[in-house]
Image (cartoon, rainbow, N blue to C red):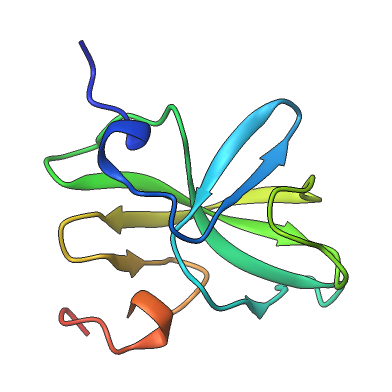
Length: 107
């Protein structure tokens, strides 16, 4: 059996959906939308499997300005990896950071 994000990550910040897929939000804070049209938040697809021990592929979920957790997103963009042991977001588009914006220990 593959170890999925659903098995490892607690959905404390809720979910986003897109085209029937659910994404576990891995940050409590929103980030600026890279396209300037709304806001964004880092997430991991619920059925994602580990790319290496402790790491899941992370995406940046783009949402409209009036979006509420659980609603449909506009788009998801690949954005690095999420370290679920340390709760760190190692983004490509967004700067590496810990939960709620604290500095990532690898920075």
